Image (cartoon, rainbow, N blue to C red):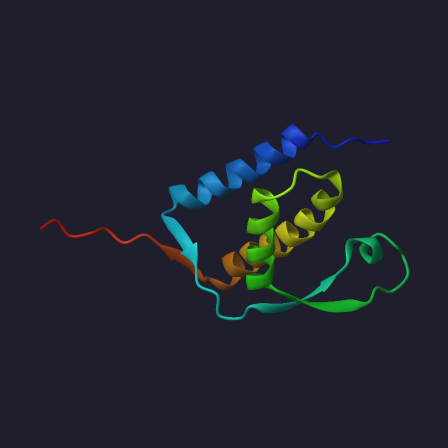
Amino acid sequence: MAVIKISELRDFASSLFDRLEAQGVDHIDVKQSQYWKVYFADAFNLSPPNLVMGDVYDDLNDLRAEVKGSNSDAIAWHAFMHLSGLMNFVAYSAESGDFVKRTVMEKH
């Protein structure tokens, strides 16, 4: 059985975001907030999954609230569901060219 270290996942995520920032990526314009998703319980069941509609704004607002809120273990799965929606949005945006790079401010 293979294991996945949390520290390795954290390092991957940090490295990827560091690369985006090094390329000057500042933010992502949200042109389409709704997307299709599969609940994690269905994703790991080998039967055909049920699709549900997700929303980037809901993911962002709920994740902000959950990270600032309770430290309950019961909340963790829900926060990771929202984080996964946002990570899919980042991947989609990278592929579609929706990243917005910082602009150099003119000196006055």
